[in-house]
Length: 584
Image 1 (cartoon, rainbow, N blue to C red):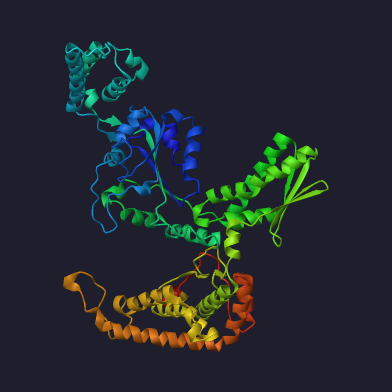
Image 2 (image 1 turned 30 degrees about the horizontal axis):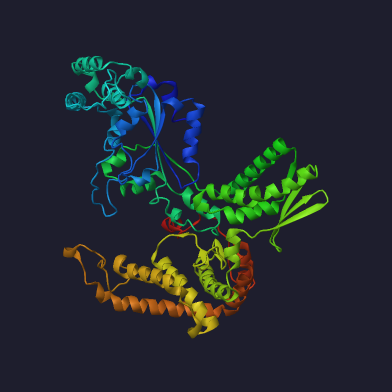
């Protein structure tokens, strides 16, 4: 509101368009906000939505100017344009090479000063000559005896639309159709002598909204299948995204001078919190209650167990609100009709609905009658399909990560899960943000290695699973960077990961040191886990039984074995006390 008030109240003082950028993950309401704002301001007739893409060849428009003109925005009056899903549009590839751009190149002109060039003189002449050629061709064909040609002294619809666009005629297309051909030719010849039709269109009074997802900044947006990660964790990460992160992300898609044209007004959406999803579910259920009361005169009483069922099966934190709406329809709306039918037949006015987690049924109570509908949530079904032995294996693996995490940081991980909504992925131990230092890199390597080592300790080396592969890749990458990139190994102080040929070092000479470092860290990790073997066994059993453990449960369990452990909130950054060290 603060940014658009000048545009709305005093557009005459603007010399450039007002540009506002909205960034956030999908489903947080960016587009909906703009559409509602447009409706509230009653600007529907002065509003256009545009999706730019340099790969899409299905649309006829190849420049922004044509789109604006075809939507009646070819004057200097205030207007609104939304450039949505901007992440689909780029001018450089991931490696920095330019994209051969042929579409929407005038987008950058619009952002620069709000002036878009009109048609060149030869464009108007080409239109006129094309029209006269068609007329002459029709006349020639008629002289040859073709009798199916209709004689029409007036313009057709296509010619009228083209004429309106080329000459910037303010009359309606249907009025232009009534123009005789000879009048049209005279008008073109007259307009050709006027300089105004060749001057750029001034869009300086335009409100330009640019909206997009920008995965380069919202890296967690790729976790689209994660229904088990706490929404508050993603929220904490998105709260730390700044305008600098946004500009860095844009610089991976556009040239520096183009990034500058986006301006400095960047509104960054956080992902939704747990309580946001709870409120959303409550609001939608309340709307359903009100509709049922208004239409049928029946009062719905929906138990909190239904809310929990919807949340478990409908919340994918990085996908926003859309999956929640879908789950409400699947769980509540679809089954409600069966209860309503029974209530209407018996002239009952109250329906009580709840979910029985043990029996997996939705229960509708109508006066003294109870209707039971078997229902297992789509995501619950996947979680339930996890086999007992698989969960036990995953539980030990994840507890290995969690215990070493506690040992090396002093606090619990944010989440610990061994039953997740995935038919292919294992559990996870969700960490806080850890500032990279020499010590923290070594600790991270040990934490990565701990999962597979815990399996060897509990199940024996021959029964250790291959679930360690990704962990070992990450650990090896850190060990390589530790020596080749950061120079934390005294014997190798040069940077050994330079790719540019004149500066390239022989990387293989560091391989032996990297392998030795990995062996040393694996040995220390095993020693640390063996020192806490009872904790590893009992925490693994608890996790296997429950499928997940909260930070409080992890803390309580660890403290029983005399570990000094605390709980840190989402968004906490684990970093050495540099300020205190500096001021000693």
